[in-house]
Image (cartoon, rainbow, N blue to C red; front, side, top):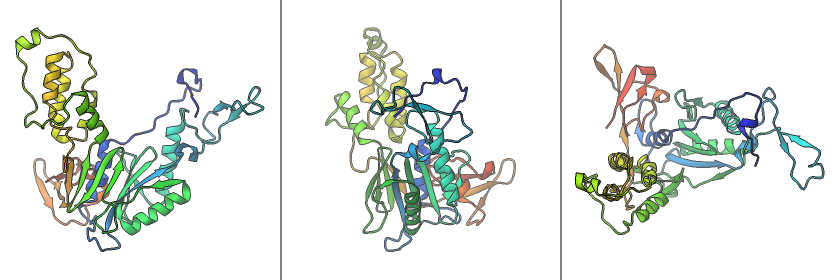
Length: 349
């Protein structure tokens, strides 16, 4: 592990490594349950080409990325146990954790590898990839590869990545009797259920948030909170401002709690004990229970093409609809997003 400080770097270079939004992971999950165009997932539990979701982690990812010889050189101190540590330093040939170029170098390394394998890289999000022949959708977050596609195609992908890097593999989830039923990606719990995929927020953060608010064993509420009276606000005392951070983190995965979280953040701009009590009342989301996550059901997306200024004409079973142009949580499991370079849109539901 190195420690490169930008203030001491006189090269003048700036580096950027994109990180995928949560919608990238949700897209992979959604397209495992969505039929659209020529993208037709197979949910037959006995089929050798049944749809599965795989989780592959690359060990010591940054060390796999070679440094571009055209980039300014990076030198590091030798370990103290090296006999030349007092008089010499080392020139990095591969990226090291803690250096400024490392994340950008690794992103370039795995992107080049996936494109070489036949994947198309996303335009809006360069961390999302699609293989038109193998029908694999892949999202890469750091050193974690989350992919959905036919079982035999995922076998090919696992072998291909394993030939390039040292990897660890979680059991694949899918509809087959030998497939795993639960996996984890970015600390989210993903379950393959009968007819749908369940996506659950980080349970550890849920349990900590409930404990911090003293709500163990309490029942969830049906409303996002109760408005505080003027007298309560006038007579109250200030509190620290960091009480809603964990709920804000969880709200990205718990749609049912997003409105309550917004209200909590608004109240906590000037926190006091009354607002804290209202925040606790606005916690229907954290209680962990069976089926408390987001459900992605098997669905067929309905795709529409804009042909007039104000009109939308349906495109049913159109072979020209290309899943590579679909970015949705998902094609049938969330809000409509831009399709087909602005000329198409998906109606969801």
